[in-house]
Amino acid sequence: MHLSINMEQIFPIRDEPSARLMSLKAECLLMAGVISEHEEQAVLGKAAKVLAVSDFIQAVSRHDETPAYGAIAAN
Image (cartoon, rainbow, N blue to C red; front, side, top):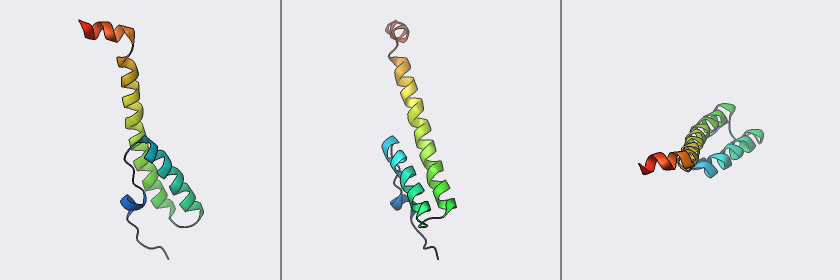
């Protein structure tokens, strides 16, 4: 019997580190039989969105630091 759980409280995903940690937590809880595969997939989907945004922001930040971009931005 599965109890209804509040996914936001059990798996708080706010940034890149928490997304990675909650993905691992979901995998462990699935293997222990605490959550269903559907619940794990919901957590992994939310984490993937946060990680994709984080990767995009890092790519833009690296682009902003290139010498060519700095010369363009100075003009």
